[in-house]
Amino acid sequence: MTDKINIIANLLNIFAFETLTVGATVKTLTEEEYIDSNGAYAKKALITVETASLRWRCDDDPTSAVGHLLQPMDTLTLIGSTNIRNFKAIRTGNNAKISVSYSL
Image 1 (cartoon, rainbow, N blue to C red):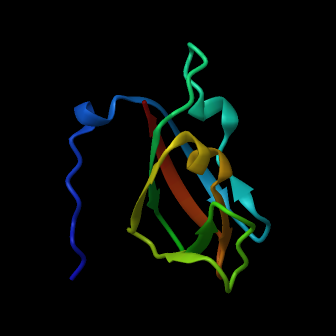
Image 2 (image 1 turned 30 degrees about the vertical axis):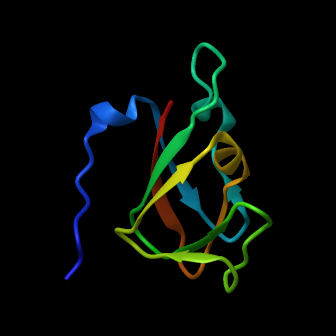
C-alpha cells in the first residue's frame, strides 16, 4: 500500500508550476519557472513523479544507475534555491513525467 501525502498548499506559497519529461539525457528544472516576477528564487520545489522511475542528484549529473531513485507516485521536496538550481534528473528506463510546484 502506498502512503498518501497531504499538502496544505497555502503554507507553501506556490507561485509557479510546470511539467517536464525526463528522458535519456540529464534534465534540469526551468529557470524561468523558479524565479518569481520580482526576481526572487524559489526556496522550495515540490516534485511528483507521474509515470516512470528516475534518478536525481544536486551535486553532479545522475546516470540511469547512480543517483537517488524516485518511483512513480513518489514526492520529493527540495529545500533551498541552490538545490533547486542544481537539481538534475535522468530516466532509468522509460521517459518519466514530473510535476513541479515552486514556492517562496
